[in-house]
Length: 193
Image (cartoon, rainbow, N blue to C red; front, top):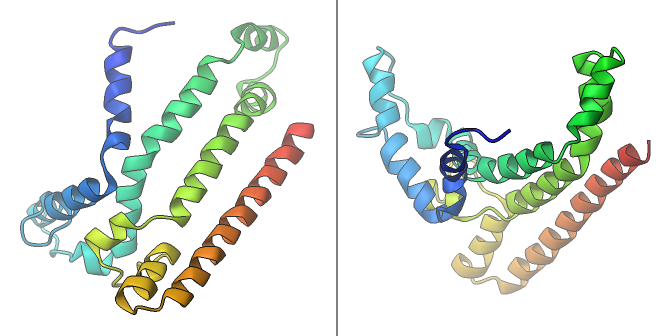
């Protein structure tokens, strides 16, 4: 059933997805994670804790937070669309037949969502294998936060080693294909059951 304000909520939920990764990383770095004047550090100190250098002590956690904030709306929108396309008559019939909530979820809802979950997993995995801007802006690859894409950037542009950078690019494409095939096989086996 449609709810009041549903369109506004959808716009607010999807808004982080449309923010450029560089802008997103800058906002998070300066506003929330800066140890001197960031909001998160201020709140941390307000409650009596010692200040934390978020971008050095928890750099990978900080980058995961930024990426999750930016890409979670995309996954939410796809899964919400899949949930809304669910046949409610089938759920009602299973409830009348005495199926528990867990069984209805396991045997009706989850199989219906499996293709949407596959799409989300594939797109998120490919994106995560190519993440660059958030790391470049926030930590510049320091504190153990380098990804394959950042290493390729370093080899090509900083070290002027185009051959090694190209080999890294080919490796990244092969890795993304292997992960995609693996995910498709797992989900394909579950769909056949």
